[in-house]
Image (tube, rainbow, N blue to C red):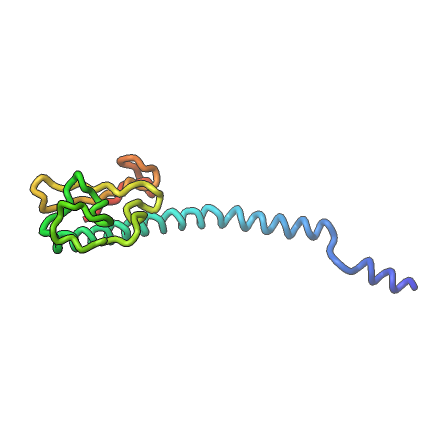
Length: 142
């Protein structure tokens, strides 16, 4: 009878053992979390760069079809909806209007040079304000 009680007492883990395991898991999580958050931020920057390249390609296709880039008035919306004053428009050049926002949800800025021959696309980075450093830095294309 004594042996049956001994086996029951030895089955399972003590509270101290459980607390040690939880403490080790917490330390690992605390050490890895900043690295994972940094990786997510860098991934959004890379995504923004690729998105600007995609919009840039759509602008080039628009120009190929219409003979000019969208006006400053029409903006990037001309890639998604027919601007009505662009003969030759056979878009949409982007399937989703969400493509006109960067990964942080801020609108991509479009600036057409005065000659109408060049454009610049800008994402204002994670902070949505001009300037910045790191993931908050502005991203330009081309």
